[in-house]
Picture 1 (cartoon, rainbow, N blue to C red):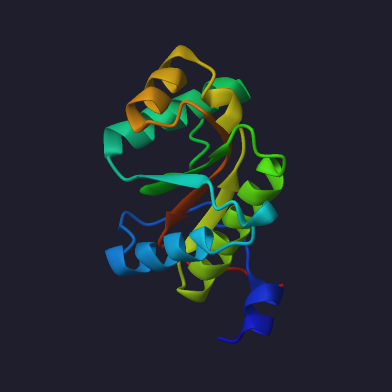
Picture 2: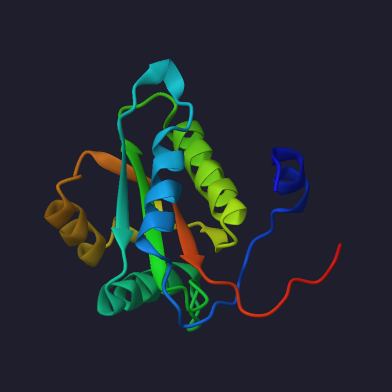
Length: 159
């Protein structure tokens, strides 16, 4: 698949199989995100990869609470990547957005489904969120978004 095909056909996946993303594919997706352009080349973003089933569930519940919903906003994805940028960065939103876009593009090139999930910032101001950020050592960071990843279920409908 060439870049043109990827750019014109990438889509958000909202239904996944039970299969996990292979480690080597996940590493390429993370590398693509970490190589995204950023303001003043600060390179001060942090990505938190979560594949532990109970922690994915906890984060899904936090996100659903912010959304005021009781559904799974992660659509059953087995891997989530939380994107954080240093809170004092003047290009916080732009840098995090570039990371999320690059990860989704790389995922699509590898035939891995992805979807950009919002509300990470709001999740992390809760007591549970603050405790996780402290555990992860990123208290001075702000959540920009979440990239959910998984093996797409079924075939995508043609455009």
